[in-house]
Structures are given as C-alpha cells and as structure tokens.
Amino acid sequence: MGFQTTQAEQSTHVGRLSSLRASGWLRGSGTAALALLVGVTGCAGGSADQPADRSEVTAQIASEVIVPGYEDLAADTAELAERTEELCAAPDQAALESARQAWDAAMGAWMWASAFGFGPVRSLRTDAKIAYPADVAKVEELAGDEGTVALDEASVGGLGADARGLNAVQYLLFSPADVEQLTPRACTYAAVASALVSAGATEVLEAWTDGSDGEPPMLQQFSSPGPDSMWSSPTEALEDVLNSMLGTLTAVIDRGLGPASGETTAEPEPQVVDEAPAHRALQDMADQLGGVAAVYGDSTDEPPTGVSWLVTSSSEHNSDAAIRSDLADAMDEVGLVPPPLFDLDPAEADSPAMESLISASQHAMAVRSALSTEVASLLGLTVGFSDSDGDA
Image 1 (cartoon, rainbow, N blue to C red):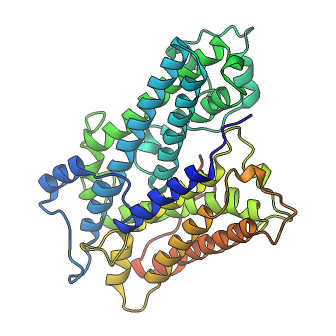
Image 2 (cartoon, rainbow, N blue to C red; image 1 turned 135 degrees about the vertical axis):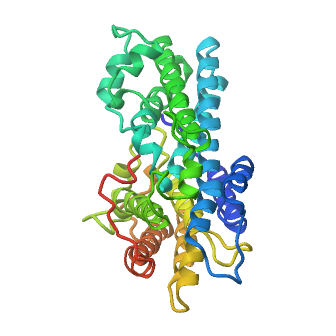
Image 3 (cartoon, rainbow, N blue to C red; image 1 turned 120 degrees about the vertical axis):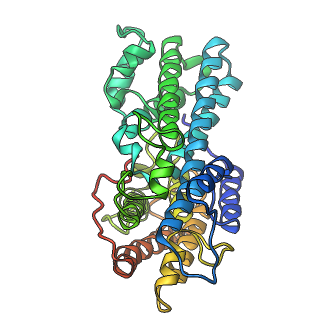
C-alpha cells in the first residue's frame, strides 16, 4: 500500500501555494542571495512606475526564485538523507512515515525547481543525480536479498541513473505496506541513494551561490549576462527562462493533466498518471505550476517581479493579467481534486474532480499558448524547448 496524502494534507499544500501567491509566488526568502546580488549589481528591485530592465529582471528571478528554490531542495534532500539513515538504524513505523514525509518534501522541491531547469542543472546532469525515471525491475533486483551489488555510495553512484535518485527511493520507501516489509538491504539502498541525491542538490546550489570549476557563481552570471557569463545577453538568459517554463508546462499537460482528464487521450487515465507508489501526481503538478508562477512573477507586486513585469512594460495591450489568472486558476483547480489521483474513477466523467482536472488542463494550455506566442513575440525570444524539458 503506497503513501496516501490526506485531504487535509492536500489543503495544507494548496494553502502554502496560496500564501506564495499573496507574497509574489516566492518559495523561499532568498535573503543571502539578495545580499550577494546587491553587491554584484548594485540594485535590489525596481518599481512599477518605471520600465523593466531585462538584467534587473533576470537578477530578481535568480536571487528571489532560483537560489531560494535550490536552497529548499538542498535542505529537503539533506533531511531525507538524515531520516532514511535514522530509519535504518532503528526501524519502526514512525521512522518509516518520517522518511516518507521527508521524501515528499524533497520531491516537491524538485518539482518546483523544474521551472528553472537550465544552467548548471544541465551541465552538472543534476536530473540524472536527483530524479531520473526509475527502472523498477532493476531497483527491485538490487534491493532483493539476493542482490550482490555493494550498497555504498561509490557502488550505488556508479549504477545507472535509473537505479538511484528520488524515484528509486520512492519505490524503496513506499512499496512496502509497513516497516515489517522493509528489508534491511532495501533500507540501506534507500539511505545511500538519498545521500547521493542530497549531494547532487548541494552541488547545484553551490554552483549558483559559490561557482564551480573556477567559474563565477551562476547567480552573478545570470544577473549580469555578457562576455564573462554563460549567457551572452539578458535576452539569451530570458530565453532559457521562457523555454524552461514552457517545458514544465508541457510536462504538466502532456504527462499529467491531459491524460488524467482525457483532454489529450482517448479516455481519462488517472491511474496511469498516478501509478507510482507514493501517488503524488497531484502534488507534483501543483508544485510544477507553482514554480512556473514564481518564475513568471507578478507585475502588480511592489516591486514588480519576473517575466510579468517585462510583459507589462513592453506593451499596454498584452495578456499578462490573463496569464497570471490562468496560472492561479490551474493551481486552484488541481487543489480541488481529492488525493490521491489514483483513486479517481475515470468512468465518472461528470464528477467535480474530473471537471476540475479538465479545467486545470485548459488553464495550463492557455498559459503555454500565451507564453509561446504572444510573450515570445513581444519580448523577441526564441522558443526552442524540447519534449525532454521538464522531465521529472
């Protein structure tokens, strides 16, 4: 029996997203990043009364969204590593539930960060270290009592990406019905894999805040694009921002809301979408949408934030308000579906839950369409995201 998120827990999750919306869609405070940014650029925010500067927008996104997002990811994956180690040292049901909750938080942070999956997360192959799709048969074989692979960080780190990461840990922690079914070898495997995930999260955070391989911090490079940066211009940096948002929206629509509601498939397939043992598909989609909303920002904030500020500054006639409204509506509709998605009866096409999924899908599609057409054209950005963008 997999981990079951209660309606109360889902409401708490949605409440967190609502509070983020009220405070400008931010996941973390970004205090340290903002302090570093002020030292680098000499500025810490704009005003709604002045036109948006592209470098100022990339600086704000980096300091207030990207770095706090990776800070959360590093903290949550470190917590997961600690909880799985404690579980193996003293296995009981409470320790298993604690490890499962830590896994849920870590996966939520990773889903959120998918909205800014560019820069070091690509060059460091962070996706392969943190949450590559798992080969369940391989994971089960390695975790079995007859497994012969040594379960230490060197050996597990040398396995394929499909045999480690958060998705492998999910199967190890959530497939057993209770702690009595969790074998010592499977627990050790989960703990070692979690430690490797934590190391990968710390690595990408440090690339943004401290730099790596002798390069300046990515925060500095993204905030001040140019000859000494990975990005040659603010426009190139914004193209990464736009395409990462589009990739995440495509993942939400094509692998989540679309098939779950039947909007993109012949019939609704909620069980296919939510087949993994943690049954976290609804939360995944909410976190991904929340990450997109944080990056997109809000032109009505004081100071204004994100791509939203650029869109509003570029033309009096734009779809900024509609984009923000559709994002909020998509998140709200996902929050109205009782978890887990796996329990939704696809035959009940007129149920409130199914109607919410359809509505969420349509709102997400509207956002994707507006970003890839009007916003791209308005800001002179090239759309070039691929089907692999936004992979979990």
